Image (tube, rainbow, N blue to C red):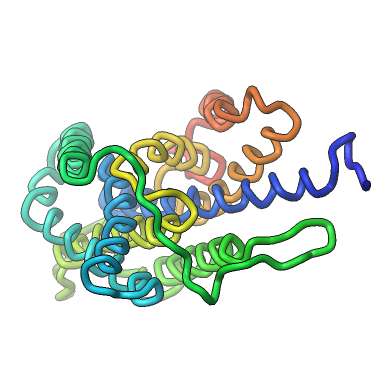
Length: 295
């Protein structure tokens, strides 16, 4: 049996895959957080609840409406994004001129309300969601068996992350969004509907969280608490990458997922805290984050 640093290759690669899968969810969720904070200056504590809503929407679409996984992958982010747009337009937009703390407290309360509602109706235990038939089974790579669905999660999240990065950094719409953040009055004087842009931005962040939730549903069980267990780690990822840094959120998400996976191999006791240790070190050495701009 081939060994690397005294660890069997199959075990090492297996944990690397687990790290990449976790990193895929970290990247998608931290990207949504970075988009919302970078463009709206809102710390969105409801992000974990929106991730959970995506998974539950997919489950309910299947059980109630018979909607399959592929349609749910499109429909659930649209539904949750619409819900996010309504929340932003009717409630969150009133807090933009106030201290960041008010937005944080509002989204934290919203997250608790959503999670509490779903826990009341569905209980705290998880519910299974089957992967589509086309993505079941595994591929023999020689040194390990790769579950097809888990490989799909990594590819789908990478495509989604790069598409959002391209849209914000390289397109005219992205330029409008960034300009509206810097000087909304000037942008509005050119005839651009800034409030609508801000609403669409929050809807995009919520939709990304829901997309991650649909991807996660067959991997983890669908539970009202699935978002609250993940959101603290995702906040740590955003801090390490740099608050508001789109590319930083993507790279750091995958990187910290892999680091976490490798830590489970070499020092399992530290695997639950390694991301927070890295966050503490980054905050001491570079408070703006690895990819953030210094004030």
